[in-house]
Structures are given as C-alpha cells and as structure tokens.
Image (tube, rainbow, N blue to C red; front, side):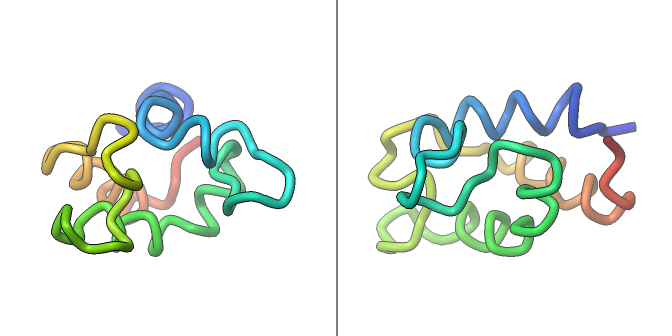
Length: 85
C-alpha cells in the first residue's frame, strides 16, 4: 500500500522544495502537509505531466528533480486508493 508518510511525502519534499515544501508564507501553494497535498493532488498531477517546455510544468524550470512516469503513477494510485496516511 502506498502511504503519504512512507512514499508520497518524501517524493514531494524532494521535488517540490523549497518552493512548496515547507510553506513559504504568501509565496506558493503549500504542499507541506497531508491535508494540503490531498487538497491539491489534481493540480499537482496535472502539472507534473505537462511537457517540460510548458510554462506550467513542475518543478518549475527543472529546479528540482522531475517526477518519473512511475512516480506520477504512484501519486495517481495514492489518490485512487483513498489517500492513505
């Protein structure tokens, strides 16, 4: 089973920090907690799947390691599975 604590949080921290993790007051949509990521998962999945030349692609300008196809699928499965903590 894919859980937030064991698989999802480390992935988000690796690829979404420091802009979204930890939260920088007033700067970016925070993804630094289970609740925040659960609320934003649709947008996260949509943006990490964009072509990397798209201005909305994340991580922005490849400042961090991009998610692999397997990691994106893991996020989708986490969401489909009911967001296990």
